[in-house]
Image 1 (cartoon, rainbow, N blue to C red):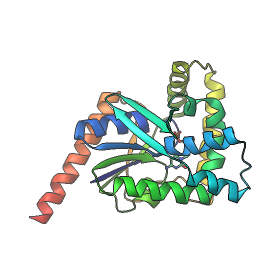
Image 2 (cartoon, helix red, strand yellow):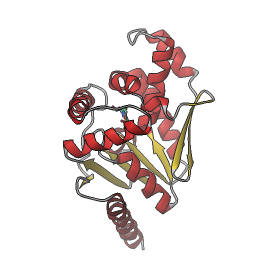
Image 3 (cartoon, rainbow, N blue to C red):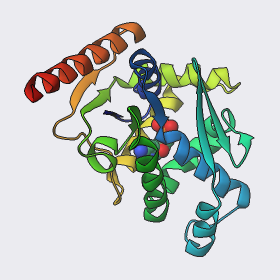
Image 4 (cartoon, rainbow, N blue to C red):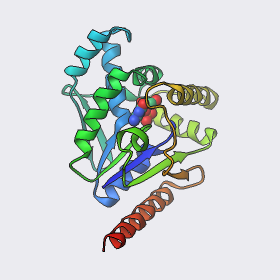
Length: 227
Ligand code: DC
């Protein structure tokens, strides 16, 4: 069973994906964290994005582990816990350019398919319902108004010691949306068969219940169809 959750930045994908996975007993896979790990590695090694051989060598030695411990998700990059570092502004400001590279996408998409093919999974990202798992059993596309997105991002940043104004955050979010949806490789877009959920006025619990109910009714419908 594959549940795909896509949508623009800061629409509540991670929070809802993690809780939906917990409620259903599925594995949670945060593909944005994988693109963030590649970005952090590139920044650390000071690799030029046009340097394909160096990028390839970096991707070949990349070992990313996403570990879920109850409420916490720990991201391990080549043996090091980078859970906080990958959320810092430096990484966020470069991740769209890195995730637009075909070389990077091919490597990570292969990885995502390998992880998710053997188990029930809730996977969140930008291209899960369109490219990575076009046949996903359930697809959601989350949207939220800009102010609420910026407020959520502000809280996330405060938790890692960074402070930014709402106006700056709205501007950054718009820039990232534009980049993510206009790139050539797997641009962000809603799959035709995705269920759109506007999370602006939902509480987290309300949003999660809404999504879990939709998933359960789709599972029940599939069971009935097969009987
Ligand atoms: O969800 P996030 O903010 O952690 O994602 C970081 C970036 O990674 C986002 O700007 C676009 C990219 N991304 C992607 O291109 N495809 C995915 N499946 C997930 C994320």
